[in-house]
Length: 263
Image (cartoon, rainbow, N blue to C red):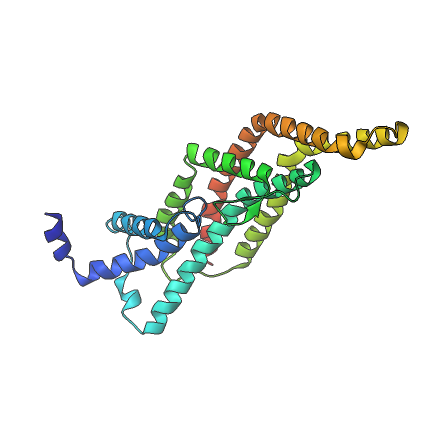
């Protein structure tokens, strides 16, 4: 019976599960989608326990890592949190790019004061950014993007022993490249709608100078909204392959970033 099997657990198995949990829990709490503030903490805790139980017979860890001084266990937990936070921040750059692009397009459309609550980050974002962000989440889940985190998690036990995480120059370079790519991706996402709104503003400026009788401030807002919404909708066909390509690149870079933290 499962209850009898749990009672027959040895101290070594319990310690091994605690060590695995120190790596699994931070990654699940920080990763995109699952780590969202809108996901209840109870769900995250149960998912972390379930993943740790699944990995217990799969990965090999040394239970003696937490049998020493209490300070060594604290250091172990902090280094594992650092690993999970680094990987999650690197991955969230892709989702943050959608919000930056949406904010810029929203300002051009005259919706700078409008905002909705982002369920993933818990912040106020532009409605356009919310649309692109939710679409990116759906694309991420539809191509099994969350599997890249679990595969990186399992393989990280081979590259990095628990407590052996270090911040190297490669780690900082990887994070900086991820942050710079975030802004480049934001420009790519907003390019169709941004260009259309730019030419719309230029056209209205010319009309305001040549035909001053037209109340351009009254006419301009609905025109900007219409042009922006039309090109935001049209850009979704271009948005899909762009995000799929970036998620595939992310799947290749996450393991390299984790390996780089091994020194």
